[in-house]
Structure formats: C-alpha cells, structure tokens
Length: 476
Ligand SMILES: [Cu+2]
Image (cartoon, rainbow, N blue to C red; front, side):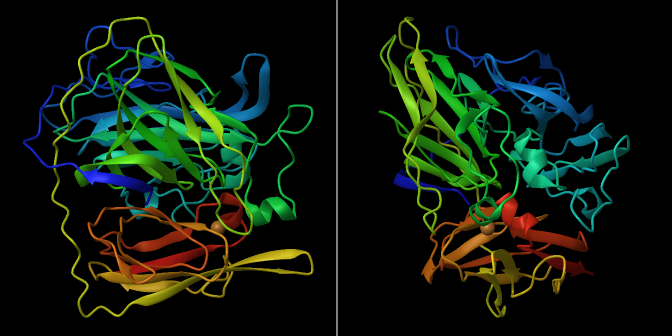
C-alpha cells in the first residue's frame, strides 16, 4: 500500500468514456491518442499486442527471453546486466481485463530463474515462486498462461536470486485496462530503480553485512532504466503516470515541484474516488497510478524530487535527489482538462467473528550474522499458515524491529483495516504495504479458490533472500 498525503477527496461525478487504442511499447508512453501538440515520453519501437477493445477478450502472446545484456543507462555508462528481450525495463505488457496472457519464456542466463507476476491473481502454478514451480534452468523454457482478472498496474520480475537478477535489470510492467479509463494526453509507466556501482563504474559486489541488513540502495537513480531523464511536456497537458517501485530496498517519497498529483489507484486498481496528494510514497513492490496536470509555463521546468525518507535504523536517509525533470516546450499551453470523476465501489470485507492471526517480522544480529524471522522462524524452515479457500483472513502484521519491512502477499489482494489500532477509513486493494518499524497493521483478505502454497515476504530483496519469507498453505 503506497502512502499518499491527501489534500482532499475529489467529489464523484459521472465518469467519462473514451475509446482505447492499445499498443504496447518497449519502455513507456502508451494510452489513447493525445490532444494535438501533447508530448509523449521517448520510447523504443512499439510492439503491437492487444487490439482495440470493445469485443471479446483477447489472447496476448509474446516471447520473453531473459539473457545477459550490456545495460547502457546513460551515454557512455554501462554495466553487465540482464534483460528481458534485450530491453531494460522489459517490454510493457498491455491488456484489458479478462484478456489471456501467454508468455513463451526462455532462460538464456547462466543461472536458474522464474517469472513472478507481481499483483496478478494468477493460478498457483503460474506464480513463479518457490512451491509454485521449479526454477527454469539455463537453456530451459516455460509457458506462462493465465487470464488477467483485474484492472491495474502490475509488474513482472524473477523469483530466484532476486537481489542480483533484479539489480541487473530483470523487471517490466503490466498495464491492465478497464472499460472506463480517464481521458489523458500522455500515459507512461514509470519504473523506479537504482544501481549500486563501485569506483570503476561496474556493479558493486553483492552481499555483505551492511547490504544484507539495510538492503541494497544504489547511488544511481533510474527511471525506466535511464539516468534521471528530462521529459518534454506541453504546458497544460494531462499526464498519467503508473509508478512501479522496482528497486531492491529504496523507499521513494516523491514530490513534483509546483504540482499536486491526482491519485487514481494503487496495487489492486482504482480507488473508490480519485484523491489529491502532494507527495507519494512507494515502498519496494508498490504501485501508484496518478494524474499530473502540467502547470508549467512554456519553456519552464520542474523536477520530480525524491525527498528524504527515514525507514528506521538510520537506513534510507539520503539527501533529496531529482528522479526526473519535466521540461515544457515553447508551445502554447493546452486548456486544462476537467477533474476526473471516475468512481469504483469497493466493498469492505466482513470480518466479524474472524479471529485475527498474528504474523511477526523480526531480525537479529549476533556474532556478525544477521538473521531474519517471520513468526520467529527463518525461511525455508517456516511453519505454513493454514487457511481454507473463501475463508476470510484477518492478519495482524507486527514488526518487532525498528526498520520498515514492505510486506508483500502473493496471489491475493488485501484491505488494510487499521494501523496501530487506528482504523483506515476507505478500503483499497493492495498486495504490498510498508510495515513501519515497530508497527502493527491489521489486514483482511478472502483467498478465492486457488489452493496452493503461496508466499508472503518482505519486499526488500535482501531480507526476503535472507529468510524473511513465510508461506500461506491454502486448501479446499
Ligand atoms: Cu525487510
């Protein structure tokens, strides 16, 4: 669950409709045709995927190859990375609710890997996680096939040797549209990431006590695989940004100088009503879907700034830095679009009579060894949490440590009921939330009929890799 500082809840009005032209781009810049003169983001060649949507569900089929890749993230600067289809990020997969995705995956890495479809409610054997499938060996292949049941912004990444495979560039976005998308001029996926380099400009070695403890936070800030890009915009235009925090450990707290965001939704799709926010907080794994009405004069610019964010134990305290710069062209401003009035009914789960389960997260440092715990146990030696399909679950997530741990549940969306005993007013659907140091968060979810051994874990990759991972054993 990404946090936002709310200014106001926008009053619901009758929603607008628009026609959809679905084209998948390798990097970003998608959505409906912009008004004349609006500026899209730079992008690589488009890859057609889904057709115009008003009829039956489509099958979106693509080949995806994970392979070594020389990652040039800025002119003259590159590292030995990994990529899907020689692109970092990997191709943006665009679809409509109900479409079927078929991915012919091939592993051309020298190590095993899988693909996890973060946030997509996939069948258990498509989840790409431990207990869901065997890792695909070097030279091996696997076919992922599932429907996309929910509207929203999702992403895909390996669930094997995550700290290294994701740092090297294996991640991409999935955009699933509904029937009633707001009118915008430009739409982009904004994948946030950072790289930790050594003095020679190569990837710094992986591991070590500090990195295991705090997570790997880099000093090179990337948007869609490139170093702090400058984005040409037209004054007055409306941009839709689908943020994904694809970094290993950094929590982003973002503000756009002179602007407020209109937040449309988060992990599990649209909120009940859009909300205005002056800042956005995204923990690793989080997504936020926002509108930006560009209120710049022609030729003026504004930085998207990552502000200081303290996530406990002195971790995550950095000077503010620019994530990207918006630069207005000299074109005359476009007329502002009216507020978005889309609404969605989000029913609260009925949790009366459900006994909460306590799930604790902790860490210890003894004799120079750091150990991570879920309910006092370290993955893979953990006792599964047993549950029955369709049985409402109420979990009290309790962080016994001083550091934030972004909790991620595979397979199912949850609602946050309360934080440290304070009720959360309007429910949203989430798959990731930042569990603050020493915080207690009550969540609820109703696992539908997809039995199996599902994972939940901290999304600081070094922590999950170090054993901060539990299992939900769902049976009929
Ligand atoms: Cu953690």
